[in-house]
Length: 364
Ligand SMILES: Nc1ncnc2c1ncn2[C@@H]1O[C@H](COP(=O)(O)OP(=O)(O)OP(=O)(O)O)[C@@H](O)[C@H]1O
Ligand SMILES: [Mg+2]
Picture (cartoon, rainbow, N blue to C red):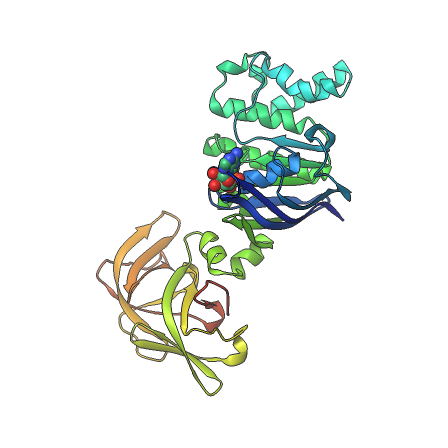
């Protein structure tokens, strides 16, 4: 069952000049950990704020557990939101800030104390319990905000970049803690981030946003392996997917791709979702799917280049090279030695090739 159903939500600012959410459709299932991922300014916070009742969409429908909520006041919506900006009550200490949502619900004092101590422990700020919030560091304030949200028991948690001010170690710790809470209690979480690693580790499903729109919703695996368009393909995956511009030509039922002055193919017509109108296409191949041999290897669908740069991360080795106008990167075995200036041959399996039309829509 869906906890949240958002249909065609459009939210604009500045008299319609800024379209922050453009026809957003999203369903969040009961008990799901859903991550909204997208570049800065794409409209993630606006969407979250509209679920919490802090922005009013121009149009669309939104249901929480089957009930329309767009006309409800924020306090009437059974959601708990952690904001992107620090919003602690400055005249209260950490304990009172965290206890506040429970106090207004009339929870008894001992239970409050117990719950607050629990969240202070796992956010690792128990020693700040009675500190003035003005004296907290950025990361401590963020953890106090996480704690203030997680003491609550809503239908839906809305977390907007909750770990953005934390150092790497704390971030990893908090990720694990939140996953444990999710697994143990089965709460529904809508989590916003622009960090793809975080999204891939946390999300059972991810919604990729771009320019106010949701481009694709899927599991991390689906999104990585079967991106719907060029934007998703380049936004997901580290290091980034390689793109090579090419042109398509059809001979009978066979398709050839012209890249630089070489030809790749044939692809069968039925291997493509559809035949695009224009011949211009973009080939996408992930760095880990490019196959590299040293020297010049002759044969069909093999291309030669020269290593321009070797990057060794200590764990993986990548080589960089050019082909026509494209700058490409490939993961190579660390057991071999790779040198700048060395000639290489690269090739790839047809099944690892992704093809996009001129508008970035996926055609293979
Ligand atoms: N109150 C507002 N008035 C005018 N424009 C706004 C307002 N709130 C947001 N916007 C604009 O709407 C767009 C989406 O903003 P939003 O904060 O939702 O993006 P975001 O994806 O959360 O970005 P970030 O990752 O940087 O937090 C941006 O262009 C932003 O400038
Ligand atoms: Mg934001």
